[in-house]
Length: 218
Image (cartoon, rainbow, N blue to C red; front, side, top):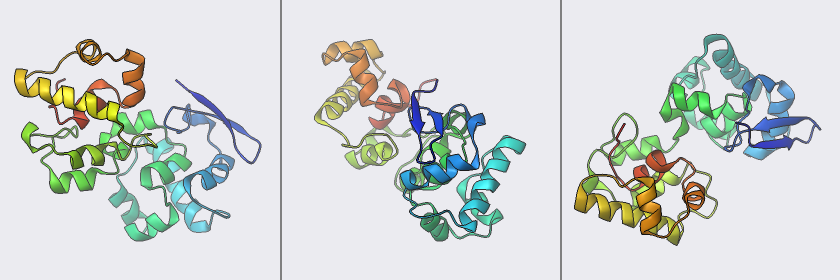
């Protein structure tokens, strides 16, 4: 559900989800992309290169009901990854796709890796499941947690409260070889459910448990 109504510098208002993506995506127009540019680190007017890439992504989303992974998008537009980064400083997902009005929910359901721009760093250093969870509980380290949360809306990073949850989950799983329920976790560390949800915007399983190195359980 839309969680924010934002008025851009062009005076038009749009509904955004909690991640700042257009929701519903049918609101999109070129004024949205132009108005969002400064928010995603692009200063000055959008160039033809910006528009070509934005319109390409929009066409893929609307006409083909898909979002290409970044390497395919670059190849089809004859753009090197370094050039794409210079065009969209906020990244492929949080810059280009956001400006094209592709909503977060669609990307998450279509291909979870579109919502994790830290994927390459994770895959290079850890054995991962297809859903982005650590394969080996014992391979976890604090750096893994920092990589995972790099795409979350956590301006202050991991707080002491985050680490308290992570420590509890790892200790519980290490002793019991199963995952405590969200209610057990909240009770054990005197945490309200709403506070837990605020700490881990990705949710309990895909947020708290994943960042703690616990396995994926359907």
